[in-house]
Image (cartoon, rainbow, N blue to C red; front, side, top):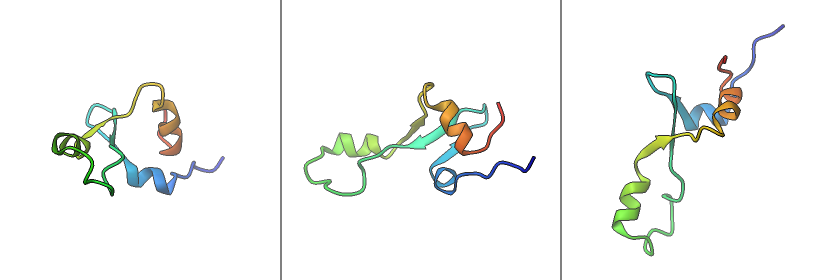
Amino acid sequence: MPKMKTNSGAKKRFSLTGTGKIKRNKAFKSHILTKKSTKRKRNLGKSTLVDTTDVSNVKFLLAIGK
């Protein structure tokens, strides 16, 4: 059986941490920033972890074994 291909869009958006968790960037930081508070924009710039309900789907896109 051939190897699984990694989804090109997913490999640009997600990365693995040292402990095997999946890191992602937050949305809503690209435009229409004047109405958003400074605190909100600052927190949107920080990365966070993928929710546990989505981990299996993201691992499938990244072709990571279980």
